[in-house]
Structures are given as C-alpha cells and as structure tokens.
Length: 466
Image (cartoon, rainbow, N blue to C red):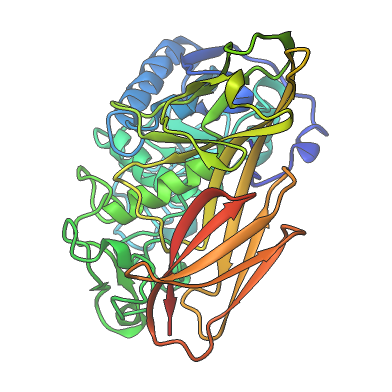
C-alpha cells in the first residue's frame, strides 16, 4: 500500500526526540500493511479528558462508516487513536479573522499540544493545527504506518480544515459532518462544491470548466440522481467553473456525497488498497491422480453490505464458468507441461462508472502450474499483481496512448470496438509496456477498448473520439 506524503517528512520529525503515548484501536479489519490506516489525534484534551477523546474518536468513526461510500468500504480501513494530553483544554482563538466582526467567540490563548487555532489565514472558521513538527513527531514514534490523519480539537465552536492527508474538526454539534466533509478534501482530493475562492479553483474530480455533457469528466453520471453541470456563482471567475451537483456533502452538511464524489473516493481507495488480501496456494508440490481436483483460493476484502467484487478465472487463456473466490481445477483439464491459471478481480459496484476513466486498476493472481501427467506430479507457484492501464488522452483526437503497468510477464493486447460492438482493430505489443491506437479519420463519438493479457480479458473502457 502506497503511503501518502504528509506536510513534513518523517525524516525531519526524527530530528526531535519523540514521546510515546497510548494507542487505542477504534476499528480493525485486517493487517495494517494491507489496509488504509486512519490515525485520530486529539488537541486540547487534558489528561483528565482523554476518555472523552476516545468517545469522540469512536463517535467520528461510527458516523464515517455509516455514510456512503465509507460504509460500503469499511473493511478497507483500520482506525486508531493516539492519546496525547494537552496542558489546557480547547483551541486558540486570536481574534484576527477578517471575515466576521470579532469577537464572534471569546479571544483565547490555549496551551494545547498541536497548536490548533481558529482564524487561520484570516478566516474565522478555519481551524488549523499549527505545530506540524509535533504531529509528525507523534506519528513517527507511535504509528508511522498511517495513511490519513484526523485531528479532533476539543472546542465547542464551529471549525475545521482539510489539506494534504490531515483533516481537522472541532467538537461543535456538527463536528462529525465537518470532519467527513474535510476528509473529502484531504483523502478524496475533492473540491468544495460551493465557491471557496479563486485560489481554490482548478480542475478536479468534481470541478471543471468543461460544459459539454459528452466531454465532461463525469459524463457517465449525467442525468442520474440529479447529476448535471451546475455553474458556481456569483460573477467573476466563479462563473467559469462548474460542479456536478446542487446538494452534495462537499457543498452542504447533513447530506450524502453526490455520485461523482462517491466514485472519486472509491477510486482513491482502490489506488491505495488491493482487494486481494492473500491467496492459496502460494507454492505447492503434490502428487495427484488423473481425476483429482486442486483447489485455488483468494482471500478478498469484501465490500458491504453485499460483496461487489467479481472474479474472472481463466486456465491457459480459456475462461472458466466461475465467479467465486475459489476454484477447483481437475488434473484432467491440465496439459502436460506448463499451465497458467489466472484470477482477475474487479469491483462491480453500482457506485462506479469508470469506463471512461484515464486509469483502470486491475488486481490479479497468476499461478504457473507444471504438470507431469506420467508421474501425476504437480508443481505450482502463484504471483499477485497490482496492475494499471492508463489510456490518454481521453477524449482523443488522433492517437490513443496506452500504458500497461504489470509485474507479471505476458503479451498485452487491446481491441477497439464501435459502441455497438463491431471490431475495428487489434493491437498488441510483446514488451507489454505501451500500445498506440491510431484513430485519425474515425468518426467522432464513443468507442470501446478491451484489454487482454495472454488472451485473458482484463477490462474495458470508453474512449471519446473528438
């Protein structure tokens, strides 16, 4: 699992002697090296208030995993809380914000551990922990395998912030909703769907200047659940930018994430965690009779409430009629010599419509099975692969470039089809690194590209021809 870079490096953190604190498990679904690890820190909680901090941490985790898409992908996360006491309760409030008439809340100077303070950058509700060195120091000494940090600030006033992989929230009654919104920024890389200012405007998962429904990045969701192309307000540069929804958690609290933001969050999860926890056998050597069955099995991180992971099995390039996490291969179906068994796992959730995404994530296990029919001797060895296919540009004008990143050797190929299923051309490249599809002169519209590795179907996506 790829670790997310924090605001400062752990190398810098190690320059300061770090103190160890109690780490409490809030939720555990599996090994830390195979999960997204959320670490919750608390600021402005005195020693006598650390039990309250744990209650607040549990409350946030429970709220997070009750809301889509985190509820469906709960099994992909672990949550831990580090109990760091502050000398005093609460957060600093310097009274320097320029967007309200101060004091809206009392001006306060608080000796808290991480330096959390309101009025950041002149914005009253912008609550930021300012001692990033202390944050890194605590993480390095107590839980260096973190992926996402949540900072709970023990203040009753409304405030929060999101950035990098740190989301901050106060203990206002809307605190959990604030935190999940901020997590949309710091984890999901989502943009506010209200206009936060010119400095925050830019192309993102849920913000664009594209107004053509066939070309907009969320084209697959247009007209579903009120997804459209909605203009930000209210004059100036804001009128140049557009969002996918009018009622998304990235715009207002106490509502769901819109379909586009849900999909973007799931794509983020898929980019960091493989849904295959383990597989069996890793390596085996057995004697089996002519009619014996050999079992192959995947341990998958299932989605909730029902599993949406689909597994495609192929033996020597031929598809097997099985969509399960395990399969029994009869020795009578093996050829004398080397055989290849492949399991490809994809998420078929209805929350995903990724046919026109630039990057496709593919998860697979490949077993090389050597069979000596005379001796009945079977040797097999499995290899797990976290692969990706990147097709760009999409929309394409002339040449579509395809890059396949995969640790398993094999012949990568692609087939281009019309939207109604007519095959136009096949392309392949034995070095499995890059392919190019020349689409110059083809009619504008939507095409389908299907991808294969050694004749095993991997995935497909929509390509828009300008």
